Length: 261
Image 1 (tube, rainbow, N blue to C red):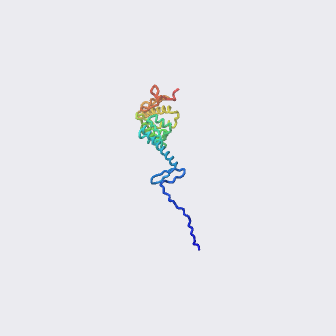
Image 2 (cartoon, rainbow, N blue to C red):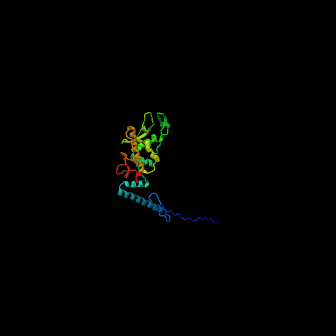
Image 3 (cartoon, helix red, strand yellow):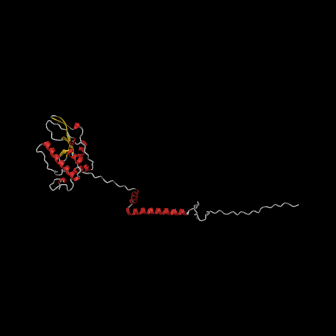
């Protein structure tokens, strides 16, 4: 009688491999060992770091160069000018009061006169009844004040013509200049509506009207010989006012272009 045989499988002994602290490297990707923590660096990361370092170095170098050449404020000034460029508006030219200020205002349309239109303000009482004066002799308060400001004068009110006994005329707006000349503002207002002959002729016309108007006002106030003016008369420049070069003749009077041959 045979005893049973027991066959046991052959077992290959397992060898324990020592644990290495060196990280496993991937083919084509070098690894960098860092004490305590394993960190993998990509080639692309190295390139980006190089670029960033180069840019920072260039920026620092430019700033340093500006500072060396022009001082510490140069770099900040350069940045500010690059951010925005602001152009200051040109200063407006302010014209002094006088004949030329009125000429300019008439020609550019900023002075457009208006006249009194209310019949009650144009009423004239005569020995035989009531009459009405033409509005063309009565510049409105607003236009008279604007004209006075342009010429450097003041507005006063007086009868448009000589006052005779038994007559009561409405008061008109006159301009009184610093030199004492006084004239009806409506007479100058006429040229703002009807003149289109240019600045030189307008200067002569306004000057003649002021000189003649002042003579008539003096006559109405003081009497004496009635004023008379030759054709084309302009007279001397208005005292205290500036005239363009070439507009005053050798005789000291303002030249009237319409009378030049």
